[in-house]
Image (cartoon, rainbow, N blue to C red; front, side, top):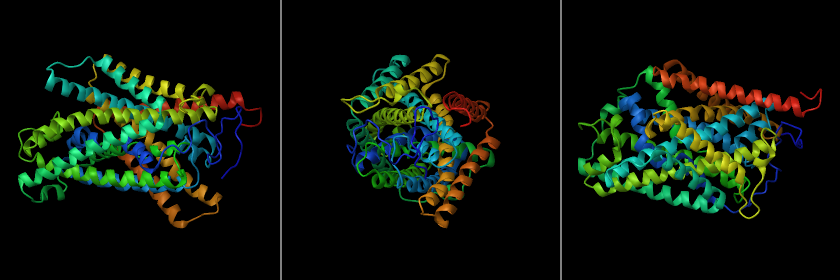
Length: 469
């Protein structure tokens, strides 16, 4: 792996292992590092909003789609974890790619990862708006004002992310722990009330079709989006070369099992009901009532809303660290690399991340897009950013291992399999998306990525001496 030293005139990020950032080093333990990944995934939001969307495309095969997504994410997680054992940097996947592959691939990874975190944050900010409306209708019988609600969510997330990364991680950990526990209680009580029995229709995979497989896989992968975000804490985690690889693999595996359990239970719970899972405003609330635990349904709705906020917080934290690393590589102005001497957090990068999430969601709302639709559209967009970063880091792994004198045919085989899996998912989505709105999303992403790479080439041309391009 290259040991080249960066200068402000180079748009070529170096390896991250020896880099120093003005962050509070070693303040996050294993649980708090895991909390970053878990909160970026926001597992308690998937049963409420994502699984119904996947069910609309995959029917009774929803659990199987999540099985495929879990396998794909474990392949990607394996590749990322091997990189995370070699270096630790706030730039995470961007650093891993840029330190191994030609610089243009590092730029593609950086812009893809930045959009992924910002779009995920916008998605869950829309989800928070949706659940704020659900709760306000239940208790106050009037919807909350959308723009102030979005402003409050994004501003509060930015303030906590700026104040203290340790406080941020601990807040996210407790929010997700309580929310997931309530969901597990409902899903445990439900078969007791309905009687234990298998659902053969789900095992026959009825409802899946080629036309729905690609979009269903993309949406199911959105449930995992951000599972690797613990890698953005390389400058703040204790013993990062050990705790970060463990955190992201634990997150992928635990969330995958949880999503499959929720998928199977929700499809089973709605069997024979007048309302469909795909159109239910709050599916877990209805299942809790059917299980005779109505108050838990209200608590789960509250937990989902708070979990959405925790995910906005996690995405703000992760996006700000990517902005820091992009500034270090001269892809962005140096102001985004600066940190608060008191809090050890990148204030300008955090402010920009929170502001972009607010402006994007506010812009869609003013165009008549609902919170639930924001969750769907931004989520679908974010997946392409993650897939870009995942594919590039998987492709870079064998080269990094060889440079470190650790070449392995097994690791190279897993790397190739991970890249092929990601490409297959992208091709499925491009070939099978029938909805005209969702069909445009991949092309919007390609346009964005082209602009990002064009910006990189302009910066590189203007900052490097003649003959260095």
